[in-house]
Length: 369
Image 1 (tube, rainbow, N blue to C red):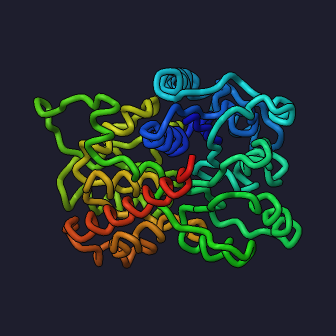
Image 2: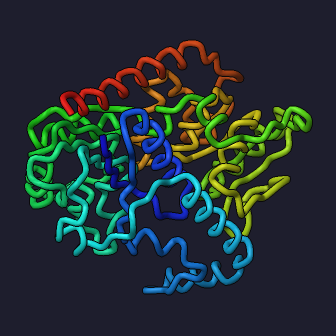
């Protein structure tokens, strides 16, 4: 069976790269898998050493790129090396190539995960990119989505009409947020499943073995791992609280100029494999990232997550599914209310049940092929 996946794979973003790798890896048990090397300049510009500005904010961003040029150079090369080694890409393909039917020889077409259905994230013009809805697949092809996402986006009436047309010939449809499942089901008037993010299809041991995680048993130094984007006062208070409470050093994964918080180690050029390693060995994790939560839960780590506000639906869905919503911190008064330790027994049972359901969803999409 030949399987083709379109997803976000060409971005300087840990979650994007690792979810693409995870879905590819999981699908390998069913056949030969490729990820479509679709030329999406809006995403690929994150690999530019110095990004060209298009507005005032872009000018500021270019200044930051210049100021951090050496760690940026290293991290971009590490991402590209990871892609070359682990991601099975097709040849580079343009939108016109897809229109010409260049990739119409596959048995299964999958619209993969990440925010590929969110116009704000995927397109500079903030419009739906129909290629992420498999519009290039030949008529009658077997196609389905797996854990596709719109984030917190809400469609206009015109977009809703287009969405219905784009999804009408999908064999089955799934997303990675519970509220998105309900929302899209109403828009297109058919069932939209809620499934796990691809990173959760692989177990803790899968990640360890597949990426050859280094054995750190000799140098087993404990640390708090900080993986957040904005460094607001709430995050600063959380880091300070747990550093004092646990008596551990703080290690930050952050490609910015500075960590924005008092830390003991600021890592600005971490590869995707090193990212997994840092999560694997962390004693405690502070994050505001959805994939940060995915790996915290999957690796059974003590953690707290800072709310992203209106964009927290994907995090809330996962916390509710695993019964860990009490790990969500929305204000400074919540910090002291979080329980000291997580008993993962119940959470892992719920996660494994959801994993089996997600795997069944995929297998149902392949029935008869």
